[in-house]
Image (cartoon, rainbow over all chains, first blue to last red):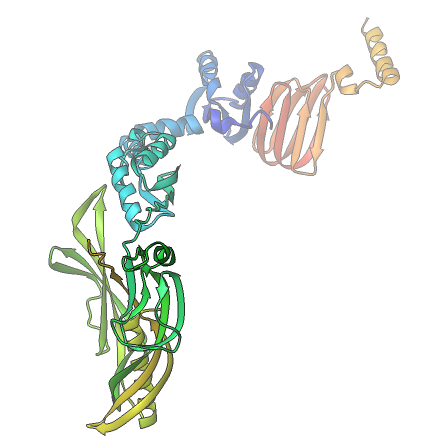
Length: 408
Length: 93
């Protein structure tokens, strides 16, 4: 059967021979070196068999010399399929178009990913890329090689120490390393450190300057904590100058951390009854097409079954190449919420009040501050609310700078 | 002359172990169960129908009968027959 293998690719035909003793014609074919297979005798006068497409010419020649009648029943194989396909023009056209589209779309940049740098630099890089002609929807052929983009980016964005540009299919990946631009600190003007709040000093650390207070001193706002006026030449001056009146001072910018205990009295009001909302987990989604202000519902026409609704819309703009279309797609999630009413006892209310007072205070003082103690000074109940006045001790930084007027 | 030829041939077969079908120009018929018959070295097709195949061979005919006959393949001097075979008969001429 080796001879028959592969005939589907080269093509084969089924022929029908009519006449007296039609099988003898097949014998004649084989004598001429034509391979025939699947020969079936249909009746005394007719016989069919398969042969290769390339042998058809030969068979036609042979049949002319005989009284047999030849007809083709079936044409099978790739050449016939191909011919049939070529004849279907719209299909062919569609295939070409789709190939063209695949080629076209795979040569467009669909995404630019920048990683490793903060947002502001990311934006700068994006702007720079836009200038090079790299944006979503750009034609890949019109773009320089990643290597040269890399070099140009480093040149044009001074904040970048290094940038790796690679192209993965239709995605442009940029990985940047930010250059830390360290500004040289200006030499500070001579200054003192003074207290900004009243309190009891708990810790002193002076980097530069002359400390004027010691631990456990009580200070008022405006009191000098660290002086920037250093009299290091004092002694020499005194030796040389008998009068010692004109002393030569050195002025420095005082630096240091002065922490002190400070006190605050905070008033809070906590109601016994309160409301809070909770999502039950039941939700429905609705989809709209948005044209300007008009929203056309696409999916989810019915109003949800639940009453209390938390509405959460999310709008996705639709892009055509790089242009944003005036049409948007809005996906909104309607979640059911439940309103609960809570009731607190007096003790719970006080606890909540203290926590609230503490967090409010810390919010105002910054992360450095530390709450040491708190004490409820006074509590009163009024109209279903607890009024609390709380006394809080805080340890915090109290030094602020005050420039020294050198008076010249 | 002919006798001498035949003697040489049988000598070749016996002493050199050459295949007899090649030397004597006889058909080699391979039968697989009832379903296939493979005939090599035939001298031409005489009759073929649904129920009968008659082939010319050296000094006579081979007649194969049965039913549902299909010639799976036909090459010069080779035929592969498929169907249900009942008889294989040698008819000397």
